[in-house]
Image 1 (cartoon, rainbow over the protein chains, first blue to last red):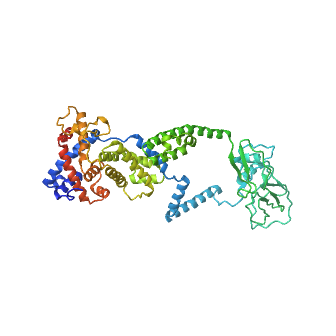
Image 2: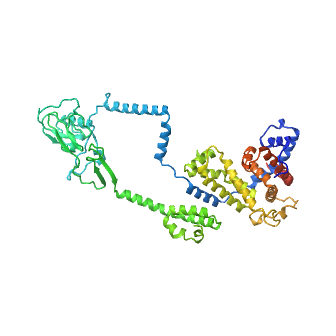
Image 3: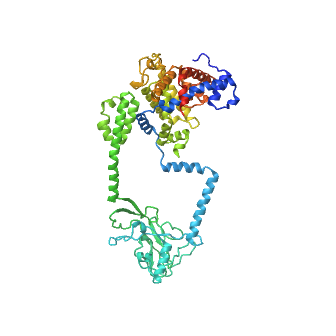
Length: 356
Length: 200
């Protein structure tokens, strides 16, 4: 403790002049004189520091601290989690939430408008099952491409066929003699007994499409089209025929196609989204991908080993200083990096072992 | 740019798991804190240990850090408290040995080499070396209260108010200690003031 812990006004003024850059003209002559004498000390200190008096700590300290910082750093949330938090925080603002809702609605309406060429799209069946793959018919297009076909495209495609212009769709799904998209509306009376129509399963269209040899084929519906009087079972598909004959064919378990050589496929029958039209590629056994993964793993191993060796060296240094806390941090890190090296070398090091 | 972010923001980043935040903080403050500690305890090896311990406490205390707190006040308080503890542990060595090396390296000379010498060395390097030894000796000769205030003001560039917060005394007391420190150093370093002025 200093003999006197107070300070005279002139000295306080001098310090203010010295460190806070108060205009010298505003200070008293005594304060200016005092400040000038102390400024000499500051000049010497600043000269010394600029010319080499200041020293750098060794890099070893930095390495140890960074290793400890990594070991103690809390787990960083995933990108999904951060997005979720951001959305949660953002959506709490009513204005932002309203604007987002408008944007979503507007965007959806815009898309519908563009697709429907000016009208709101009717809720017609939008998808047709992928063609069944018989053992004798290997896929000629990627499975993903065949998993979903827009019915509107199919309709126009069939028209083109009738007009003598084969289209890709028509080629793929066989001959469609006549078809129109007349999805049965709930209010439409069901014809009674009228024309007979033999509903045959359209060749190449799987369990969802039918060809009718009498009147017109009316539609292709999926299992989630359950309005009207159509008889519908879970997992089944109903073909509504204006001629009065309705044929129902279950699609729950279609005959499994021969698997393509490089993919595992899961044909959605009664499962999936319920309409039996989904084709999911659930995984891959592509040997190339497997090989790439293996090569990556191989490349990382030496780097991790090298890091673990560095950690051992740092841990030894810390152990010599009896800094067992740091040694334990290093040990944890080394174990994470290379468990084999940790077990075989790290914990067997005599200096390190004393701390563990 | 991350490197231009405030200390407090970087610390919050580290709290969230971004190690890069801590790395920048370390790079930004390591040298200043190290020299503060080094001039406080006067021994390089001890100073490195204390520097390491200072930042280890920052790492371990990161969870409890609040964005409102000024990071440097927290950091310097840790460093200062460690220095005070270290000095108290060494209390039995009240007087510096006159024939012991003043710095860690063996060729740093002893106090006997410096104190009676009135000769100015012929070249700038020798003069600088003498100055460093004299300056370290003069700082070491200050009372602990005066030394910490002087080092915080000159080496950490802390305002008197912040020093008062760290030390836990009124600002006027800090200024009083600074005044005494400057006065003592002026007497000790008087012969070097012309050297400093001569440098462009």
